[in-house]
Length: 338
Length: 251
Image 1 (cartoon, chains in turn cyan, blue):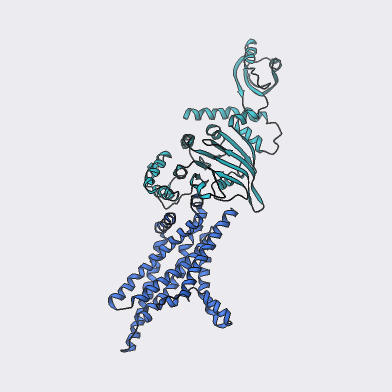
Image 2 (cartoon, helix red, strand yellow):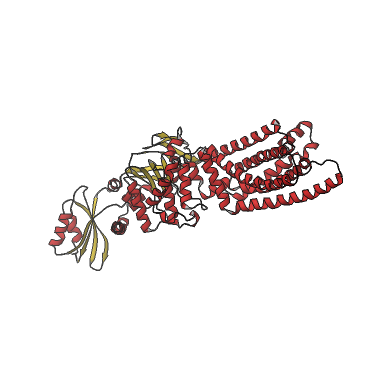
């Protein structure tokens, strides 16, 4: 659906996007991840035909942006970083104007506008001037504008920026609903968003693609070995040695202690599940097993690992240990919300 | 074409949704009314002094009124055109237009027609004054019609330069000021003509936007002036298109 080949964009001497290539298949939701200034917005602007690339080609919905920009634009909906609203128009007027310039036939305009307003939940503000909307509504009216022509391709630049948690959830659900009949590219720097909504992730840094994969694969690919987090109450002094002696376990480190409770990180050979043995060993010695769970590298860690300079350095384990519980708690909260 | 009209409609509604249209039209109406009144007093005295000799309302009253009125356009048109591109660039709405299935030309023509619409609204106000003249006197209608044609063409030149300058900057004040400067320069450029050599003199006289209006106010449609105005407008719009395009490349 979208094919980007050797795309380069320079602003004078500065190279914003440096020879990136990727493809997006029909029905996919591609997450575009990268630190600020990585070239996400520039790439999206090229894909929407806002600016031409310095080098390389991009094909959107079967039309090359260089040869048939109008055809490509007709099939693309775009939400820029700042929603492009005219403050002096009401939401309905604005969307009707958008429908007209997007070439929606006269007879269908009213219906399309109201469908788009329903979908993005802005119908209650239809007669309000765009300039008087809150940030959340502005963002959603921008989204309504993007989905208006029922385009095959949707390009969303930080669609959830500035929304409150409830609206973020609604927007994510909306994006998930769009999946299937639309191909979506969205950029974000909120990582749980990617793992929740996207089918594939492109991580870019300094204008270059550093990784393309599914969120799950990315997290597991960068994890060399399996690591378990074990929390034990009132364990003996030799506990570390005992656990390290179990078959398959390669390394045991103490990550935190509080009163009599100790948290341990137990690394094992990749692909080998040592949870059963670990639990049995702890219980057999009469220690209290409070917690036992696999530690996965969160997308945050993957992201940091890929986008920081010393990418060869091992990911600091204390970061993993402290981030992980927080991250999973957040995920759970969001799941509960849905 | 429907795209061009969509943009033009949105431009006009933007003028009328903001105070711009009312301030500009109000100011114009006030100034034009004053010009009309003062020249009418002058014409009145002239016709008394002429004592029985025929006086020409078109030649001695309407023509000076409209030629003077062009000064007002010099002041107000920069206010109309300065926002066309600058405002969209600053607020980011230009991204909506440039990523919609529209050609640059459609956007430019739409904006041009929008500004011309407001200009035409200003001219429409003067129909009241001219209408009064037809009620109480018997002026010729043909020179009046050519005057309006000339004014529309002259306004088109101003608007096309205004669009070009607005497309060059994000700052409306800068756009307005430069536009005003350029208008003024094109206005007075032939003041120094008589001091120059014959060729320079011709060139300078040719460049002056208002000089070409003169024949229209006399009821003459000279292709020389038509060509001048139409090519001026086309060139202005062409440069605007180039400017919008380079802006894309520069990002």
